[in-house]
Length: 322
Image (cartoon, rainbow, N blue to C red):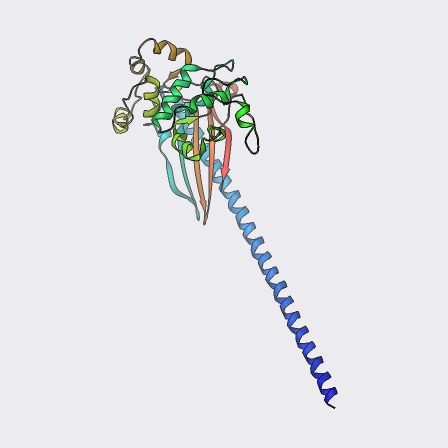
């Protein structure tokens, strides 16, 4: 009798354990289904927000392109920061739950890194010296100027103070200098030891545009103007520079060239060009959809004679982040 009772108890224990295991398995399966469902819903919502952000930022590109074309149609050929194209937009709610911020920057008001070399790919020594002074003005060692020039120049022979493949091939992983024009100033980060802290200091002063692109004196930074003239006139006096630029181009070409002295004037004139107009702009657009934020960086290029001779501004490159 006692044996029968013990057997029944064992059977009940096994049944209870089986029930517990089944409940646990059912809980795991239900949790997995609920998680997958929630994840799919979130992915669907994220995809919809991404598509909406793309449409909003594309609209901002169209508005910016129109603003540039209209500005270039004006009687005054100069492009300066007091004009409508330079006014930021937003934040403004474009549709319920979606806001837009956008701003245009004149890239020709920055130092074009590709001008560190001449059209034939050889070193542009006066431009390297300008870049050296610009780096020092930004609080960075000027020795990085020949490093960057060597990164772009066409040959494999390091210049004095520069670096070529022998320096980069020892890195992990190893890499090589491109020895050609660059498409983004972020390639400064590829220089061995340059680092993000230095890049953050100089990013606002540099661009990567076609070799030979002229500097727009009307929008050039105080640091770039001083680096060009080799004078300490505007750095530290940015407010005075902005007052001089109120509603007009300053310095104009004649005023700027009057500050240059020989022999550096002739050397600089051969190495770089400058003027009062711009064809290259960067549009920074931020679209906020609910709690998600998307940023689009667009390089816009103005063509005075587009298809059928009509002027147009087109998007050259885009970088989208979220």
